[in-house]
Length: 143
Image 1 (cartoon, rainbow, N blue to C red):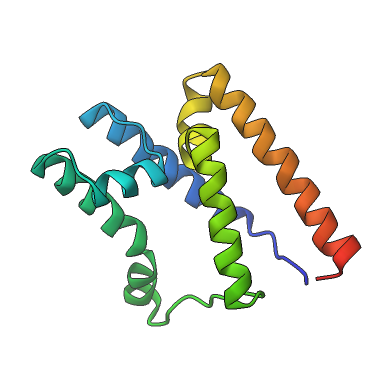
Image 2: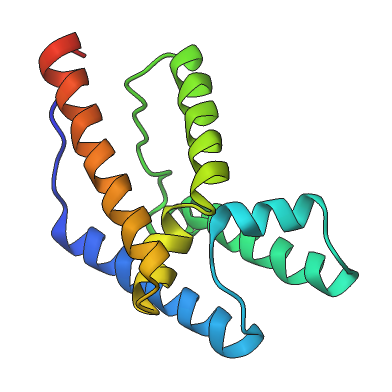
């Protein structure tokens, strides 16, 4: 499997994520960690909590619709693994989020920007295990 590096799309996405995280912190004083937002949406503390979380989640998933409106085509999405592998991967991520006290967006984007020692350690850990996983899957297993 070959992956294409798209510097313009990557830079644009990074800027938008950073802007969204900054606006959420500036407007509501909240950290933009995707799993925390989703968890709070499922079990909101109040109606106001539900509203901002639902609006943010809607914004996160509406990207393909924006691409469709701008280009007339849905973006191509290729998932090179089976549904069972996606389920296993999701469960592993869920365990990591639980034990790590947050996800990559919470630690990697927001925590690193705040120079949180806990987030720095978590992000370094994410990156190490990502590299090990890619190595094992591509060079040992051969996926």
